[in-house]
Image 1 (tube, rainbow, N blue to C red):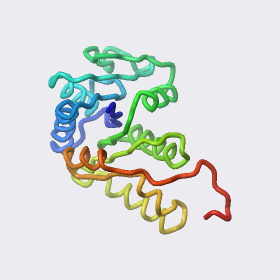
Image 2: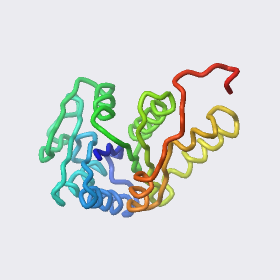
Image 3: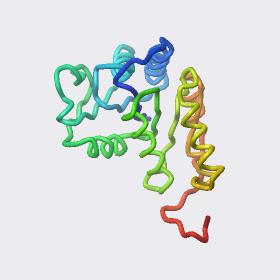
Image 4: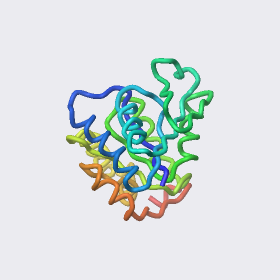
Length: 192
């Protein structure tokens, strides 16, 4: 599979974030997967890309022209797609990928994750979405999702759009086995 990873342009405040990003990259190659990601050489993005490359794997970057500076653009990837905008980046990454994984990150990572979940909920794609919950990083977000379900803003079955695990090996195993819930593109009030 080609797996798209959303993750931070920072390394974070815990060594576990860096360790698990590198471990995930190594496991990608061991299991025959390729990496699709945001094209950067910094933060967790750089760590996972370097881990995949070091293990002999394929890395496909997608970066907007405005971010393709010497400081950000990873020059060693297998393939680099340069696009016009952040919107084009997300669309291209979705097009190139068979599944998605979110690692810890900031606003950009959260935005990419939530958009790809929304696209799955709306039936725009039928691809698995994983969350690597390193050191409980996503506990707050997952709690918010459960709260939204409790408040009838998200259908309970749509919680199954997410595959959550605490280790890279467990996450990849669950992604391989996961069956997506049935979703509909459009909803009517009486279907709630």
